[in-house]
Length: 272
Length: 156
Ligand SMILES: Cc1cc2nc3c(=O)[nH]c(=O)nc-3n(C[C@H](O)[C@H](O)[C@H](O)COP(=O)(O)OP(=O)(O)OC[C@H]3O[C@@H](n4cnc5c(N)ncnc54)[C@H](O)[C@@H]3O)c2cc1C
Ligand code: FES
Ligand code: FES
Image (cartoon, rainbow over all chains, first blue to last red; front, side, top):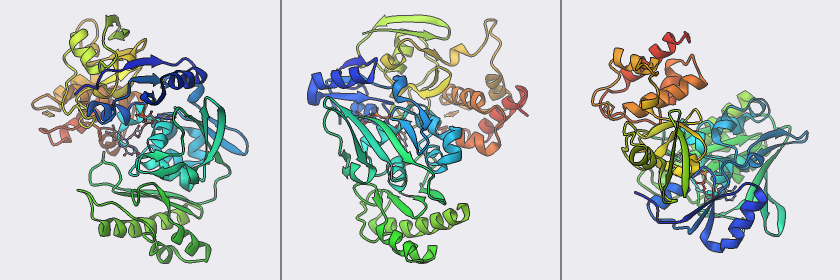
């Protein structure tokens, strides 16, 4: 399988990347790790005319302590997140979850920015940035703006990014609320989550329980009212609308959400 | 576009269509056919090579993304005198293969693992090979081979 023909351009700066995509309009796409985009292009489910490669931009690849927050460049790979000492110490949820994405080869290529922009409801990091209440920074031809993670995911594979806008940075406030956990249920090691849960402090976010990653609002408010993990977890599927597929019926996903949220809350309590 | 990749230490330069996948560049342009195409959907790992020292699935990467960078394929592991790499020797000694189709990818994934973690536990080896499928061996001897190679290289 090979993709339909396109023109490849490698940007040498963020400014140039934004310019190049603006010039080619709707038919141009950013290429980061290529681990969501290239499989789609090989199946001809995506047929961009132009790819603008941002994968090698050093100015998008970093993990920095900025005092009151940690800043992560959008082209930082899952592997770099997983092995970061800074994240391991200050934001273990992000490091740990990144280490659960796909397999080592996938983690050597795939990036956090690509994962968020692609917005697959089964992806791990979108739920993690929700649980971390992160701020996403986007740059377009008109300049930069900040988008709260809670406002970023709009629908199936749909985000608040305007056409031509590049995600440049993910900012996460510190210190993170105490207690974290990540639970991912798969049938085989390499698979995507059938259901997943990310917990940081009192925030709980679900993978693959709706068209977008969602906060488990009913669980969070039960926790705020002092409920124990098992009690709060009983509300895990409230208000969600999970899809049915080969892996799971809706009822099975709802069951998994309750079980995984309970495990995650117990683990977070132990870690906190 | 013009793509230049340092493959196993030598420069390979060619004018190829922008959509050329790295695995096709390696097999069809560089003539190095140890790198196999198994699934072509980034699932099986048979196409694993090292890009700047790290394992990647070459069916899910453009040759253009490797332009100006360094790639090592299975052919590049043995030294100049044909002496096999420790991981290759361990696969032979521990019977880490049957049909051999998955082997180039398994070996490259193992080499990448040992460069990141020279002394892995058995569980770490199994996790690190998550992206590589073998339909023959049942994995046990592959894991044994990787652990043996780590031992030989002074890991344990
Ligand atoms: C075998 C396999 C297993 C996987 N398993 C998992 C898993 O278990 N969990 C999981 O979460 N993911 C998984 N993934 C997906 C992986 O995490 C991808 O790396 C990720 O979804 C996309 O990141 P990328 O850098 O490869 O983006 P690309 O494929 O390069 O891009 C994806 C999309 O985002 C856009 N884009 C990329 N970067 C930016 C940016 N900075 N700003 C704006 N738009 C941008 C592109 O234009 C494109 O539309 C798997 C992938 C494979 C191939
Ligand atoms: S051929 Fe590349 S992963 Fe299977
Ligand atoms: S030895 Fe046959 S596929 Fe692994």
